[in-house]
Length: 137
Image 1 (cartoon, rainbow, N blue to C red):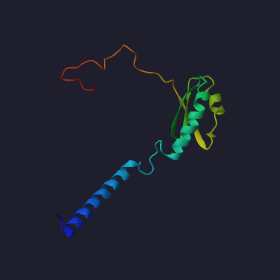
Image 2 (image 1 turned 30 degrees about the vertical axis):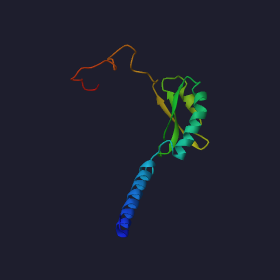
Image 3 (image 1 turned 135 degrees about the vertical axis):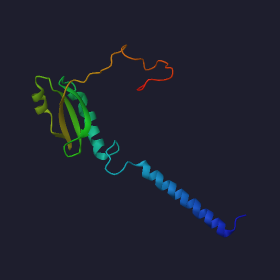
Image 4 (image 1 turned 180 degrees about the vertical axis):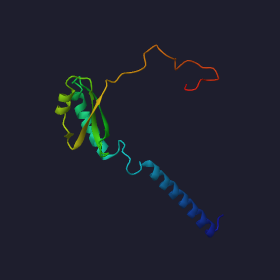
């Protein structure tokens, strides 16, 4: 049987351990201040606008895609990728809004996106390999 003094020490140690664990969990549960992830209110606002407008904007063959990114002042913004080789790229850019429901819209001129791998070519990534295994596999 524990004496009252031993009981108090054990209780204090247990309480300190539990509090320490709780503080550790809450520290690692949330992103550090200043981190922009999908839980940040401004990022979620951009994502909502992106979800709303992307399908309509993608009907234009010059618009290659949209993304959530940062503007020149490091604020979340909607990025619109426009085909740099399109004959009317300037017109498409002029017709895009500079902001939409308080969300900045940035335009990036880019080449068309292409997948680089061709089916059936290259190394099989599912083949059984025998040691020594080549670097990069």
